[in-house]
Every structure is written in C-alpha cells, then in structure tokens.
Amino acid sequence: MIERAIENWLTSTNERNYQTPFCQVLLSKGHRIIYVSSHRPMEQGKDIITVDKVGECCAYQLKTGGIDLKKWREILGEVKELMELPIVHPSVDKSKIHKSFLVANGEIIDEVRIQIDQINEDNKRKDRKYSYLDVINGKTLLKEFIDAQGEFIPQELEDFDLFLKLYLADGADFLPKKEYFEFLDKTVFADVHRQKANVMNAISSSTILVAYSLNPYQLKNNYYALFEAWACLAGSIVRYAQKSGFEKEGWQDSYNLAFSEIIRSLSLLKEEMLQREDFLEGDWRGDGALVYRARATIVLGSVAALEVHFHLADNSYAKDERILKKIKENIPLLWLCGESAFPYLFNIVKYLELSGEQAIAQSLLNGIFIGTLNENAPRKEEGLPSPYYGISEIFESLFRVSPEMIDLKQFSGSSYILGALILMLARRDARKMLEDNWRKLTYMNLHEFRLDKEEDIFTWHAKEGTNHSEFPKQTQSWAELQKEAGNFEGAPNLLIEHLDLLRFFILVCPHRANKLIIGLLDSSGMP
Image 1 (cartoon, rainbow, N blue to C red):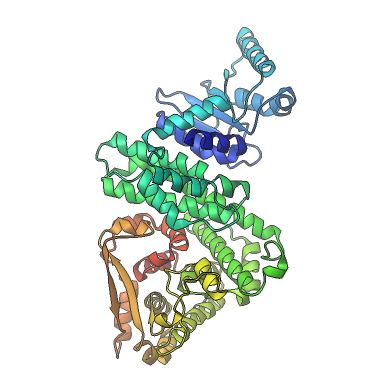
Image 2 (image 1 turned 90 degrees about the horizontal axis):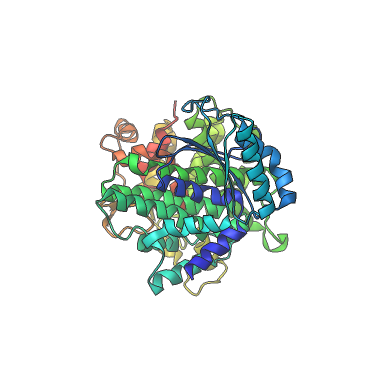
C-alpha cells in the first residue's frame, strides 16, 4: 500500500518536486553533490551535478512525465547541452568527459531510446569528446525511492494511518505541524543509533519520506505549508544527529537539501506575493477583516525572514525594494493576534532595520511591546493567547468553530514574549519606553519553558523541562539590563551554529522563541 502511495506521488509530481528526494538517493549511493539547479535560464542543461564514489563527475537533467517523440524534439537542445557542454565548476576538471543522465518520472518510449542510442554511437564513431547519455525512467525512479526507504516505511497500523492522514490532507490548509513531528519521531527517528550507517539511513529516508508526504501541498502550490514541512524536517535532522552524537559531516548534505527547500518554498511565496495586489485568497466575501490581517502578517513576516537571511548570508545582497515597499504599505494591517504572531513581527522589525528604516522599526517594536503589556494586563477579561496557540486555534475559538474554547482570561497578567521584548528595547537604548512602563511590567508574570536537553529546541513537544516564571524587579538598574541584553556567554553551541535555521524555525514553532534565541537572532546583523 505504501508503495502505491509513493507511485501516485511520483507520477503526479513535477521535476522540481522530485529533485530533492532524487538528490538524497544519489547521496545514499555515495555521490557528493556539487550543484543543484534553481531552474533558471543558462544552466546548460544540467539540473544536478555530482561526483560519484569513484570520483567521476555526473550531470543529470530532470523532466516531468513521459518522453515521446514530440517531447524529445522539444528538449533535444537541452539534452545536447547536457552532453556536449563541459561542466563549469571550481571542483571539476573541464578536460575530463562527464557522465550524462536524462531522468524522467514517466516512461521513455522505444523510438526515443533508439534515437539516444544512435546519438551515442554517432558520437563514439566520430570520436567526439561528448559524454555518453544514459536514461533513468519512472519505473527505475520508483524502485530507487522505495529501496531508499528501507526499514523506515511505516509498518505499524497506527504509523501507516498517520502517514495516510498527512498524505491525504487538504493541500490548501495549514500543515498539521504537531502530527508531522509525531510522524517523523515515530517512523524515522524513533531509535537513537550509535552506528554511523544506521543514523545515515534514518536521515536519508526522512528526506524522501517528507518529499512524497507533501504531495497535497505540492499540487496546490501551498508554498507556506511546504516551507513549514521542510523546516520541521531540518530541525528534526539536527535534533536526531545531536541525540545520536553524529558528526556534522555525516548529515550536513541531507540537512542542506532540507534547508534549500525552506529557501525555495519561501522564495516562491515571495514571488507569489509580489505578483498579487492584495492578500486575498478565494472568495473575498469570506476572506476579509481578521482573516486578511492574519494572512498578511504571516506572509510578510515569512518573506521578511527570508530577506533577513539573504542579507546576513551575503553582505553584497541588494535589498529588494519591492519587499520594502510592500511591508511599509501594509504595516497598519499587521496583527498581534496572539503571542504566536511575535516571530513574524520580530522578523519584520529586523528586516526594516537592515533596510535602513530604523524609525519605522522602532515604532513597530514599541507597538508590539505596548500592545502585549496592555492586552495581557492583570485583571483583564481577555489576554493574548500564549505562543502555544496558533492562528488556527485562535480563529476556531474566535468564530466558535471548535467546542473547546480558549479561556482568554488565563493569559491576563502573564506573557511568554515580554522578557524578549524588554531586552530588545534595552539593546536599542529605549530607556524612556521601559522607564515609563516599568511599574506595569512589575505586575506581569514572565513565563518561559526551560528545556532539559538543548536539542529539544528543534521539536514540537518536549517531554523534559521545567516551567519557569518570574516577575521583573521592582527597581531595575539600566546598566545591568543592558548588560543582560548583550550577554550570551554560555549559550549552547547548537543554537549558535544553527541561527540560520532558528530564524525560520520559530515561525513554525513560535513557542520555541525564548529570550535567548530571540537575543541571538536580534544581535546578528546589529550595528
């Protein structure tokens, strides 16, 4: 049954969606991936370039569906580039002939195979220094993917049922993140192995398993759900490798594949946003007001995180003026619907600062701080839901869809994000803002869940940890507060090494955005 699900995914997906799992198959065969296409022009017919385990360079061109004579004539120019043009890469000797592979997730008809054989024979007979073209069809791909899963294909009825729920989900909806983490933990990462081969097999299988479980979201071009899923996987890989004591070199390539999908999905979300005039989705009559504001906050915050990543990863990155314009135009729409919205707003603040818009950024930060302080003030009838409640749960309660209503009274007089906000203001020398509101702050109970195991920051539900609460001091030294805001001594290396992932991961798991993580992210890129 699981094999049929994989087959259905493979035959219905496109080349871009099976590119990453195919890369993982190549990694499991001992290849070293040196290039993966972003499907832009001028890539000389090569979607993937690898060096195999015997040191030979291989180039792959991926296609969607079957290849008949008509399609063959359409792609012949690309195929010739694949075979004839040398690989241009610093680690490749251009004088050596590479191997070429045409890959399709459908069947390649015999007439096309005959022409390929004739081209190969003609090149050999005329002693042309072109590579030999081999083919990999849908049946071969299917076998490769199934074999790569090995023991990690869901076997227990409960696990298989969970897989089907994910595979048959509504692709237009949010990703069921809790269930996704549960599925990975039960099916792939359940056992902590100490042998390198077992750890590698688990991590390799996870990439392929996630790829075809995302079929409903791929069909709907739901880029935000795809982003969340790959972020879940990237975090799970880091956590599992840490638990297993596995050296980074052994799992870095698989992690890089997942992280590249995070960037790709958000890049597609960015382009979709820029092509639209508004944030409407579907019938406008049921998509206005709070729903519209929530979507604008999520999309703008996610795209801002992407732009911050690009800026910090490359000092020469030119800011996208279209994004800046979009954010500035829509600042009035931003909505602190609950504390789970804070990571989106945090990334918008950081993006505005990196774009030279410090005044707007400070105004937004002040608004988040005052809004949280006022909405969660003691004795308020309704407070902002904690970061453990996402937008779906908030709307279900707000619109009386769910029988389990959120008791908003429980959030009065407490907050999970105020501690991080206080330190953000201290880093920006916003002394007057804090002084004017310090008396109110001293009545607020600042919550934080402190994990026993540092790697559990990368999971949805951590079983080991303690709930910590404290009230701010009645009198606070400004010098001490600024010292605390800039002191990260003793921060776990695991967090420091994965700040690039954490910037995205706190969007997926907002309850992991504690003041240490926000502090580390906030300090990166600050003047």
